[in-house]
Length: 312
Ligand code: RIB
Ligand code: CA
Image 1: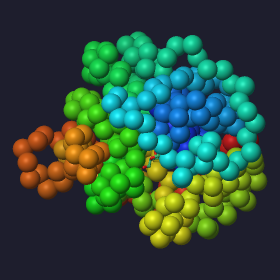
Image 2: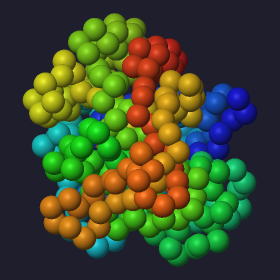
Image 3: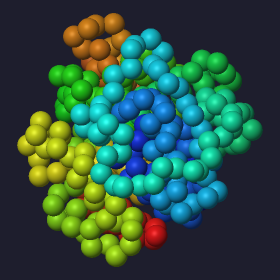
């Protein structure tokens, strides 16, 4: 596989953290052009701090970190401290970051990079505010994107932030709508896939016994953020949502799905942020995304462990 050039837009978040570490542990497969922090799980100043801490933890000093959007396009920001803790990255005792933040805004970085670099993949781990703003401010870049790979949405798994909506799609439903209608090449890793990738106690023990700093720190992160999903869904661990996007880039055969039409509810208070998946083609809406519903959980964790072992 030739190296994929990617930009990661993220709201760390412990599962975002594992995605970022997985990407940074895979330099032969992924050229991370930049990491853009966006408001989501916690406010922007904290997601930005957390992104800086994670790049420092990875030992990579070539990675550029940018500040993205601090609020959704229309909605008031809804955060998830009840899952991720007050800092958004509760658990590990990571030092206050000294890693630099680039002057340029994250949205401008996305626009400038898409205009000057061919074949770039956008990987989104949080609300789609930054991508929607880039596509709106610079419509010329939409056709230059190789693929937008998103942890976003749900179908049969319904919702995690509301009865019908997945958090990233919900927080900025207007941005989700802009991206889903953009005609860019879209690949979704929704709850239907990520709920098949559970950090069971056995898998957590592998992280603890990894023999480096990253493994145990990852286990501490996941322990600190698993309670909500375990209580709500009754699982033996929490799903590793965001790393599914990176695993898809590294080993696409771990996932399977279907080209379908996916739209999002932007008006109804009852179902705001619900992704409406036309799986059975009951409308004439043309397919606009690859929607992954299956994931090989065991294969995912073997990949994750193999790559995290490379980090300090
Ligand atoms: O619904 C799960 C998504 O919302 C993940 O990206 C998690 O980090 C939160 O942002
Ligand atoms: Ca996230």
